[in-house]
Length: 472
Image 1: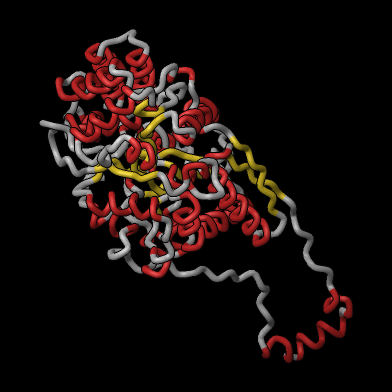
Image 2: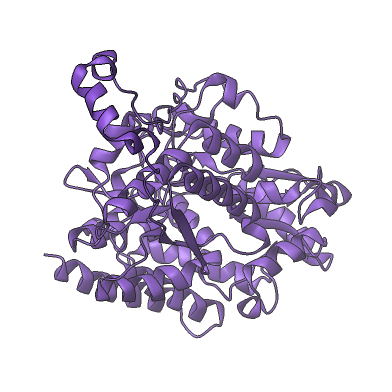
């Protein structure tokens, strides 16, 4: 993920640098017609005469079957992605005789950290399921033999080369075991009306960001809306702070041992977060607030900024949950940190969420999986994800497709990506599951004032050392 953006993300989303689009897939469901020689041969005529009922034989009986499908597209924030999934399911069912999907919607963290691990351990995961890439998820399950090798299916469908360079975290030994549905970056959404009211510059430099936060706080407005009941939410900002303070190379370095969670640079990133807590930059009572509460506070004008994933841009359309401030929201990357290491123009970029498939499939289920992949990973659905939900495509889109992007806020997201010198992943797609879980536990302790930044770093590193040793 540290490759130059022009070769990965900008190649897919920057309007002036998009590769050729995906070709369509033709369905061949019709039965083959008999050849002329077969229909006119004496043997064929004799057979027909001897058996009058042969020409009027009843069609083969269709065998009905179900395929379980676990997804995480639940609630208002995911409604656009759920609509895409529903359309893919409907189309796939119409193409595969007898198929009926059984959908099971589960909250993201419950699926990832509770249900799916238990199912994988027992050897009975759903046939199709939401899967996260990386060492703690896709790669671990692939090594355990639980995931279907998709490599021959991608070759059969002719779409393997249409994916961007985003399959590594779903691959083991050159074989692909999962497919990212799309990507995102993370940065600052800010209320342009509030910034104008208090004569604030856009938070594109560190000084302007700090001045904005202080001014908003002085006027009884929360600088950053946040809902930290789910620790993955504040972890987004922590990840980027580490990338800014310690340098973007630190993120992939945790698992390799080249970077340490308790190193002075990483601890300094946690210290910066702790300092912002003490200054009152974040929502009061944040540990009791959900992710949706964060958006609600921002839309209500209770907060001037919100650090969130680029997918949130779809919330500020006229017909969406954030319609009250549609046209009054802008997006920027977290600005360069004074004395920060590495490329200060680098941005976080993630292609972690996707779909995986059970290694235990019968012939009917395999046919359903192939049709699902064909329909989900198409030009049409990739473009819908971008236009309707702001999800960055994981596959190449044509210039004509990208030209359909007209939303100003989404264009700002694309401009941020285009201007970045490098990208770095979120550490939840790099480190082992136990390590990531510890980052959430320790961050909530930091927020509650029950752990110092150094204690946080030491605790996480202890788990990282144990997991790295166990992997040898």
